[in-house]
Length: 317
Image (cartoon, rainbow, N blue to C red):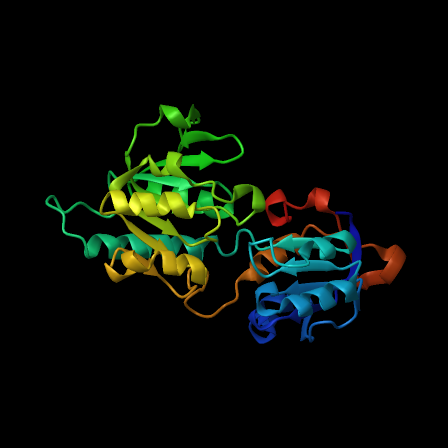
């Protein structure tokens, strides 16, 4: 992606989840007006907040065709919505990688506490103290949940897909996955985006690290979890799955375990804050702060944004 120079006076919002009324207050100090527009509105050299999950594929296609030389911020951490590559060809596209991390982490903590509260243990352990937790992924959410679990007393190991290695938190000493003891983890958290290269990444090898009575929590997309490996793990023991985003097809595969009470599917709530704040404006504001005035084009209303000065986890991969 290339730099863009945009009109900094107005943020145009597409999709119900952008909630212009809620974010107007936080953006007032930056002297940015917030205006909702329907999908397909011609937009050029402007700032755009796009809730792609609220729009149909046809609406996204229409929006991509009508949006040129803009800064488009996805109101989501997921970069794989239809027509986003087309948007990225003609615009600077960023995403909310950090704003939702606390809400996702709170979901993990809550679901693990609920899991332990409904499970009978002989020694009645605490939900996190002295438990071994495996965090698969170390982006904005992976970092936040790993540090939070460690603060609660868990022994945290991070798996980074790019290196294919395990990193015990705060030791800095990476080890190959085959050096980890089998079935050592009480808890595994999926902190991966649904990118094509990560489909089925969590397979038999990683499930071999999770105890047969362990707990898998996935507040992210289901694609990184190999369905066959998941079913084999469930069949081999008494482990439990909590998942926030599952397709109808995968839900049917999990039906026997749902009926047994060993699989809990939540109604896509992991990202939601308690007060209804859409949250994305926090990441948007951090990116906005990297911009520079460009008086050669629009005077005081101009803002130049360069992907080279924006944190990489805000950019689409």
